[in-house]
Length: 353
Image 1 (tube, helix red, strand yellow):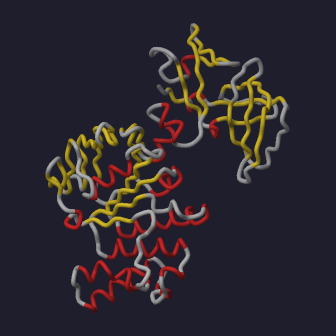
Image 2 (cartoon, one colour):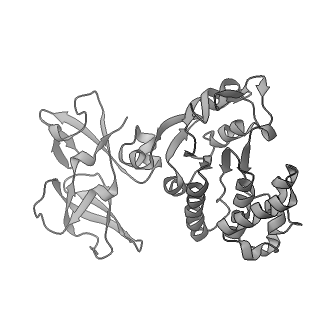
Image 3 (cartoon, rainbow, N blue to C red):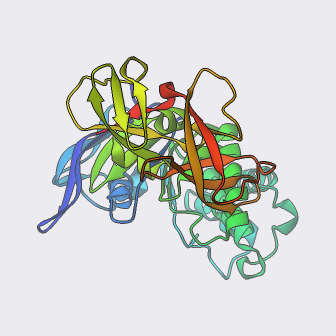
């Protein structure tokens, strides 16, 4: 039995369809991210799971029991869920320990039990020595840890997070996305995480549901979303990619400036146009033709940008107008205008519609 299930759930606001026929199935202890651009319906979906917004159609189940359907919504406080918002919603007049204890006090636990749980939780989030400080004296990352501790200490069956790292700078976001995954591994709470940041979703999630215009485009592991995108939208939203449009000519597929044997490509005979996604790391930059198992293309460096961990190059195949984006190690510094060879593995080219 699923821990949490959404069955053909839709939500309309007047004539606007915010969510359309969303079906999801979460196992107990799974971490699932809803990933997509602003306005795609991910936060509305989360709010329906939380019970703040009723579905227009479909139903939501928890442990096989319906908790939301049109006209019948179980109150949020009765769902055994915790939710973390973008602004953390900490009580400014309460200490760290008092903030974490708040949900336990509402549940009227014994004082000794509250203190035991709070101290244990603060140890887990590494804030024990700050228990008597107030939120205004904490950094953004520390405040986020307090919000996580407060949500987890009540031992919810489902944890909901709505863009929890959007107010942090880049360094803190990277630190906290790893922290969120560490806490998930420690407690194994079924988690739904809303974000527009693919890096957060890739680091933290067991699976990711990519949303677009109210619909789910693909649900998969981070690795499969990146390597095997289901369509053009997923390929472009999850990571960087090159889109190559080709035309089958006998036993080859002709692209702009080069050709590849049709037998080496995925589904070269199924309709037109033939559009393939090719990730930048799947293109190897060579200074001479060399030898290898991939397809080698002579090209010219059109532009470059040094990003510290790698060079971001754009190269144009000789005789074509297409520009391919590729990544190369920092030591591979090639001047703009230089002729190079690109080695492509056709197996890394994914047919997209």
